[in-house]
Length: 124
Image 1 (cartoon, one colour):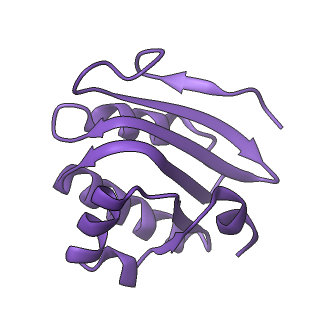
Image 2 (cartoon, helix red, strand yellow):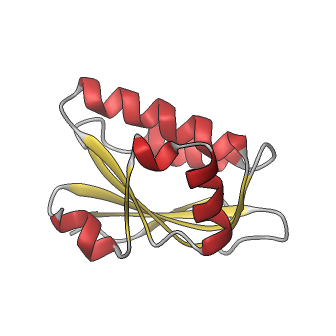
């Protein structure tokens, strides 16, 4: 396992996003905290782009995400399609109720699997 790395500020700034990154059993695990929107989407994209390209299995822990707009939806769809081409997958875990509602309203839960915990997502 590699140590956690953080993209963005050490903690989410008001209206900002922080992303931690670790590798567990060959799976890239990203922890998102704060708000994922037009102003902060580059933090997530940077974390994904700076990850080892061989890691095509990804779990995003959304447990500390307080808000997400179409930026997050588009980013997750883009990553989903990219990793599928590499025979990988993207799984989302621990989405809080407001984020979960957004994912369900646009039907993303029908495309990308949602899991109640990171452990469940890792073992699915």
